[in-house]
Length: 72
Image (cartoon, rainbow, N blue to C red; front, side):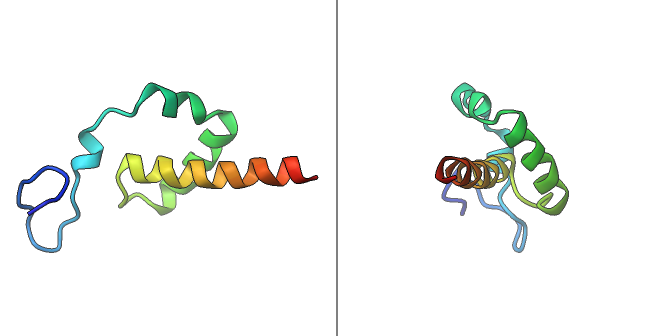
């Protein structure tokens, strides 16, 4: 049984619940043009991940990028 939606998924199939959930507006705003470029780059490699997982990964990379800029 899926911990996110409570439904049972076929064995070996990843849960797609995250794909159905709308992305919060504040997350959309946080993914700026630089974040969107990272997202597009990640999308090709991580097409098996749900949108929310990809956005989380993109935001993590983007935040690291921001810290590098601030550190200079």
